[in-house]
Image (cartoon, rainbow, N blue to C red; front, side, top):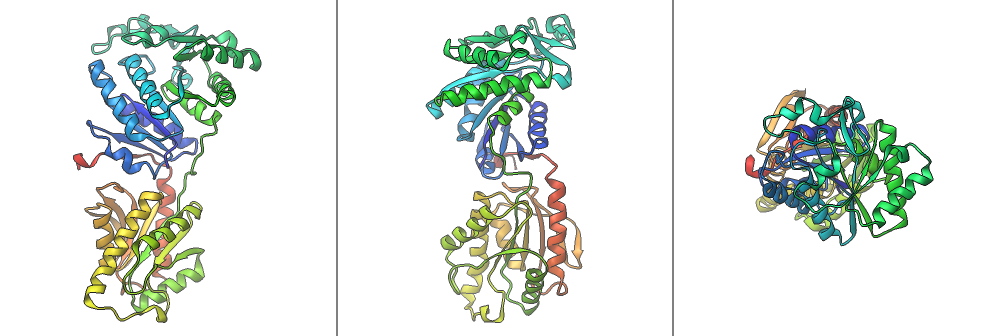
Length: 439
């Protein structure tokens, strides 16, 4: 389940924010809207961090408000919500942040306060006395003052937040940020109790961001009704998530193997796999006709318990005694049932890769998960292909598939070893998603 939702006003910022969380150990995906937010719901169970881009930086204020509100509502519930703003304060900073705070209050029923830390030290952006600096220069004294689409006329963070809003702000100045921990916590606490909608924190180094975030976490622990919402270019919300100890599923998820083949060769391959590699085996409920609900419960439980990179195998047949005489109708129903089971399990638990055995099973699984096919990267063994799922909510998921009569005795081991290697490489990437309406 996603723990963090970041709403960004452009794709470049969204990707940068997602990359920061990914480097810190959270799994992250960027979601583009075009006015639709179904992709957020589709990916909610698969990533720790959802970064939605509204592309509203240069839009009319009312358009930005609708987009931000829609994104927050679609991404709820999460532990932390953040408004990703431009490092040079361009665009609808105030109205977008106000919309995010309002929507979060409505959904959570809690006292939501924004923590605005607009500094991005690694990019040469600092905040001193509530003034945003670019390499030590006020924004309005740089070429940004001549920006064609969003000219910057002030470097006052409070003034930018207040433009077109009713937001009340309080500043935690650099002299406090760099002072004692007790004084910093007191300053943040007093700002919240004064009725501020947004607390602005000065910073010129990453350590300053960390100190303000840690102080905010202390105040939140004292006041259970308080919920912080980040307002920053990325590093501030990352520091806040770390200070609040927002959980991460880790960079790796299990692998899922689905076998519906009853051939002698498949049984041999699976037995070799069980002997050679650690595997969590799930046997489907029902004989002949599968009990989809019960099997989904079994499979989901194993996936939830499995560690990153661990293999979970759903197999209808492992030994000779598992082979049953099936009617033509039952034979047709079996792959469709396995497809439904796979889709429902994937909706509940992220996996890093999928392995399927049996042509009918592969076709049924792809149909259920909305995949239009496989972008083939190559063969692991002759006639066993590796690639990515094309389109649908699981677009880009690594997949290896083969028929029930394909390969030698070690084919399943070779296929799953390949899948594990690919999954490990992909975990260093940030995924990008688009809603189904754009497919």
